[in-house]
Image (cartoon, rainbow, N blue to C red; front, top):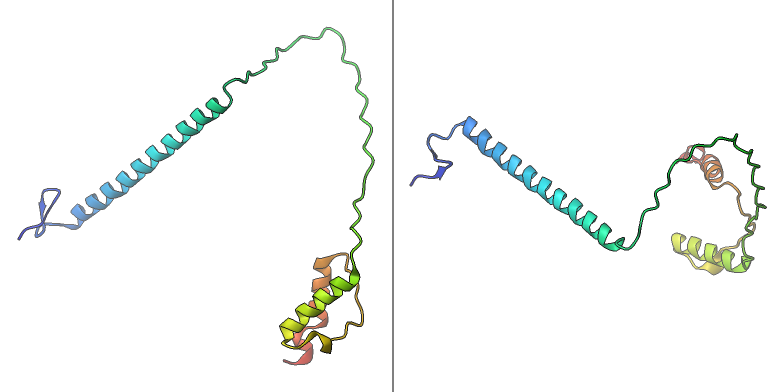
Amino acid sequence: MSLTLLSVQAENFTLFDGLVVAATGILTVLAILFLISVCISVSAKIIYFAEHKGERKIIRKKTVRTEAPKPVSAPEPEPVITAEEPAQDEGELVAAITAAIAASLNTSPDRLVVRSFRRPQNWQSEALQEQINHSSFKTGL
């Protein structure tokens, strides 16, 4: 029983023949991928032109000015509108936080008491400060 691959007998198959077969396979895959990418780009252009068929491009011609340009005044800045947070029921927020803490501690929410509640302005620095204050190095765990 003889296996022939690219007209080479299995007994006489050398390392060079293996490299030729591998290179042929890799080049074939790359060529097919290149053809697929060309087909995709061509179809994208066809779709683009089909969608924008009725539109015309406006080409502006450069005009030579003989007069000095008039100074343009700066536009007036728009008034800054600050978006205020809608008023929320703090009780609902405290209840949600209490329920989340109770679920993580595997206890009932009626055993927890919220003594203080404040909204931090900068969450990142607040989290860092909490990590420093409640570090496991302080408790010795």
